[in-house]
Image (cartoon, one colour):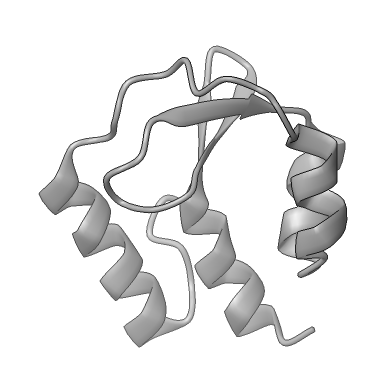
Length: 84
């Protein structure tokens, strides 16, 4: 897969206390995922990723909307995640 898309997909994750948190969109609550599951997502394997996290509750609070949207837009424009 193109590295540009991989970097855009990285914006769906935040690392909090050594755990990866996945957010389905800018408004959603976060789901804790392993680094292996994160890699499934970054390799654009959505079915395998969804099966791996099926039934897992979204326990983390939502991210701040405007900073998150800005991060996603910057990744789309520049082709890299601003947090990298």
